[in-house]
Length: 563
Image (tube, rainbow, N blue to C red):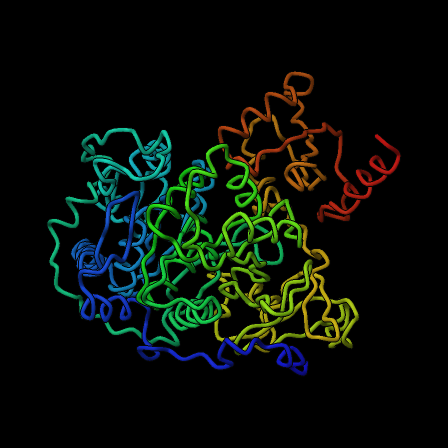
């Protein structure tokens, strides 16, 4: 479609992206920053400062450790970690040796981790010592891992200061204990024993893959969206440009790094030569302390985070005047003008704007909200080098402005395809356009309005839950013959998971809803756990195809009837 949104492009944001150090992989920006200002803080972690020189050398050492282990260019490395400096070191180190980063949710249980390790055929895995029991449970079924030393184990205290400047979670207070040889190798030992010299691995920025970002795509079990080094440079650079990041910026990174949006705020600050203030897990007090004590200038949040920060009983004790810009995402609670004005007043002038539309397959951040023409409820306007169109659900033809259809987009951040999933790739990537499975429309000003999902993805507290994945996990219970999962509305979480279960004959009348939910809590990430289970004697199908639509319609009728 015609780029009608350009008439509302903000005057203070360049219309073209400039790559300040050229079109090279992001780890080269790290090297250049380390050479230019080696002693500057690249990371602040609860008061511990890690300079650009330290980050560059540590990631070189990590890269060389992987090479010494026998990994080579194109091998996959899993990062099964919460937010911490070790994540950033391992991320850049993997890229420096030509490897592909595979972020794994730190909330994963064994079945979920097992799936991603084996689907990606990961050669190595970096994890937290507290999560080792999960890794140990799946390691024997992961033949691609290159031995015990391919599991690199860290503890929060490896980089925490003796006197933290921000509130710690309970997990961060657990002392470090030695790693048994059968479980892996200590992260710090791996670094200490490796060469600090930069590895000489050539990267083709256009063709070589930097990331497997696992996503359900338009349907199905999680698939590895293959994102190139160009995508990994292009999108964070666009974000840094739109957000006005400079070497003087101090970027508060709270959103999970394993998520593509959280990952942006590792890459964008390094491209800008800025400082990243890392928070392991959101806590309103820790955020207040980070802004006050470390003078954060930028924060990417979720709306409920802003509300919790404003509602903290000690909020008035902190100076938040350093904060100049806050992007946020509407998870459960939608951003509106009242919340934005409340935040601006609370901080002494910091604007709060919607972070807008994006998805894993496009390295996210495909639209942004112009500061001088805000339309609350919209996704803003498309960003740099974006091609958008709204297409008819059946014909795939583009529809006129104002009409609803499927959102399709193309930009330099789009994936190369799904790992080992040619049919899913063909269904999603058409002439370079990612067909998102989302319903939307453009208004006369070129603002995108998101209207819902074609796909059956469930949004629980902002997390994407894919029915097929929950069904597959639940089918591992011996009592479950088959099950079907849908999302049902929930006042606090937006949606929650409901599973309709057909029991195996031997278990009929012998297992309860509560027992299956308790089992799910032990085997699934919290947001995937069914909140409701309903037993059925059969499920609606056409042939072998499950008709979740019928179950959704039944639930809608119950709700309409006041059930």
